[in-house]
Image (tube, rainbow, N blue to C red; front, side, top):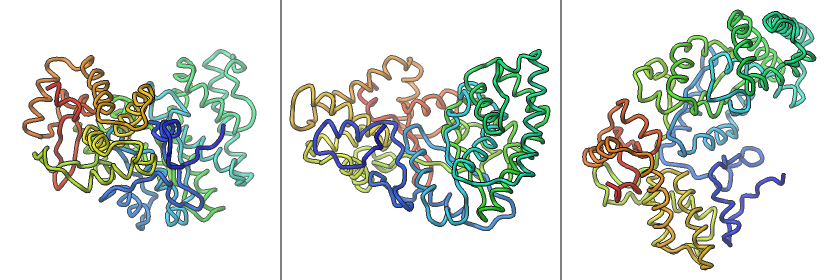
Length: 418
């Protein structure tokens, strides 16, 4: 597949591609910023970079979160391209969904994925590991395969774990992702020797450091996708184990965990990526010009602004609520309607139509109690971490903002519904 070219669109065909909703922005050559990347004021990723560059006794662990669509994946890739980070660390970035089933995820899956990706990525980039480590890895692999073979009554050929340590990691990951029964067996065997797995991770990390003179840094994306119970099981119940690997790690974490009492267990290493403020607290009719200009730039680098009426652009920004993904969604849906009208420019009516489409989606899933709570929040702007409010925040029916203090408001497309 041809690589994506980050060029400003002068027609709707190209603009449609540029507003793809799942388009994390990889840094350019030598860590240069992606042409589509838009920095935000007081960006927490700068705080995370500073923390990674600070001295430490043990490689640090951080928990990075934010609402769906706020740009977490893009910010992690931006961190990955930082020259100072690359000088101090040997970084890798991967999505946990590539390694296991994120609907049924467990702390053992995550640890196995960390060890697997460290080994595979280092070998893929041409790194040589000491023979003694390879011997140790193959000994560990043999013990695991032997246990699996026992549990599955000798049916080792069915799970295809034999071969090199690299093949073991690849095939074990595939089984963890696709086969629930085998997943449970591998988890049990891993848990019986969890210290052995952590030791393997630490030995791989130490070998990489000895060769590269840089500390391995693992950035794990999409760890925010599992539900709150899975997140608790990994980051609260097993927090101490998740801190054991002797490499730096940035875990993405579900925003729901930030709205629970269990957040206290990770608060000292947690950072939250907020939405863009479009108006001050409790003043919905007063425009935050800096926020509007930022989202205008978000559109301008992707599409020639002559393709959209200024009033339509302003309305789309208002409806986006300061969420990058919602902005892309509104513009893309508006472009689709404009194309069907065979018009030369996105007009206010196209943006209104796109907003109505989003509003109708919410209308199907929000009940009377939800609407009552939304109306209350619209009046008070108070952020309360209740079981009722948490799913509305995850659905983006409620949007969180940060000035000096946290506050929230309803998604702007829902105001008419209320």
